[in-house]
Image (cartoon, rainbow, N blue to C red; front, side, top):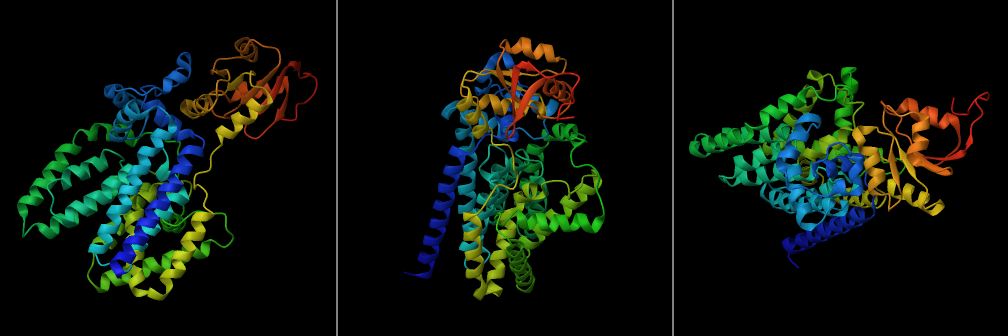
Amino acid sequence: MSPRSHETLIVATVIAFAALLAWIHLRHASIWYDEAITLLTASGHAHVDWSLGWTQFTPTLDLHEILVDLYRQDVHPPLYFWSLAIWRAVFGASIEVARSFSALFVVATLVLLHRISREIGASAAWIPVAVYAASSVGMWYAYDARPYSMATFFIVLTQFLGRRKSRWTGFCAAAGFATHYFALLCIAPLLGMKCVQRWKTDHRWVIFTLLSFGLCSLPLLGLLRAHLDARPHQYPGFGFFPEEVWALIKGSLQGVMPYTWLVGWGIVLLLGAVFAAAGLWFAVKESKWEVPVAYGTFLSSFLLLAVCTDKSIVKMPSAYYLGLAAPWLALLIGHGAKMLPRLRWLLAGCIVMGVIASRPIVNTTDYRQMVARMQAKCSHCPIVVGTGFVGAVPACVLYESRGMPVFLLNSDDSVRDIAQKVGVRGTVFFVPTNEAPTVKVETDFLRQYWSSRKTGYFEVSLVQPYPLEEVHWLR
């Protein structure tokens, strides 16, 4: 077998393995907060409309309504949500269908990454593919019903088309920007380098690319302006500069290496850093500036954006966002394999171990298991849910409810209102959010009745009011 055939076999195996793990995840993982918001937005109901029940997850083709919802309360551009709405209208409304849309972009990105790694001369071109596949598996964000995998695909496709002087480069770059705003931090330096390189030899391509990108991006400026001041409560306060820079560096490595529970896994992050540093040295030595300059500009821009918006990188799940540029770090590691050929199989072995022991980098409540436990205890008992996370928590419970009656707790409800809503005198499953505006009535409800704490919820007995003269254990 020739070396190229051997490499193709490895790449095909990696992609098939990534697709298999994606299939397992998208079929068995519980829906979580952000995915609930995605389904609601792609269904034209950015707020939970409790009168519709489960039918509010039915996809809509009213793209204008989706755009209005994004403008009013979300912080994302519309292309992913429009595309997902059409995808779900064709293939079905389930979370599995929505996740499969993301999984397709992961597989396509892996194929493109292999092509690019061959062209730029990365040693053992299967290494960038393996590294990026491992990052997708390790974080699971790429397989979630969120725009990250689609945005990453357009970033890599822009690089791929730019190397071929395709007239679609500017349109593709605009599509990435219209999928996720952070994609612009990757696309801008990439387009800038391509245009500088090509100006003397093909200024028509440069002008056309910049015009197509600018004209297609222009409609997004209104949305971007509205979203700049959104979520002031999220990750506030840029802190001590060295700590923030360290969080940026660590997050970038976590964004490309598997995230696991294994003891001493930081050593593998260090190994990835060694390969990346070696790749940077190789790129400088061989004048291969495309990847290191683009990736360095992305990290610098991310840091500058955090400073300007007073957001703390230490507080945010930075690897979740920095994963957008994970293919470039994977390519740098591929360059590093040229400098450290004897260590590349050690890196590959660590990646395999990391994938086997991987866990998501954003840990959330498993609503599927939680509702299953409720159903096993009492399939006809009602579930009462608080309002927090812009209706995402009740949406998660409603989606996984499996036919159990679910009631939403409103901000102006009293404890008596809860009992009237439920209409029973028996066991009630209560899911608090501890979020304004329902945290007070949630606490009052748990103080008035006997309750038993479970994992993620309380089992409350409405036939046993708690004696007011005693002090409840929750106080």
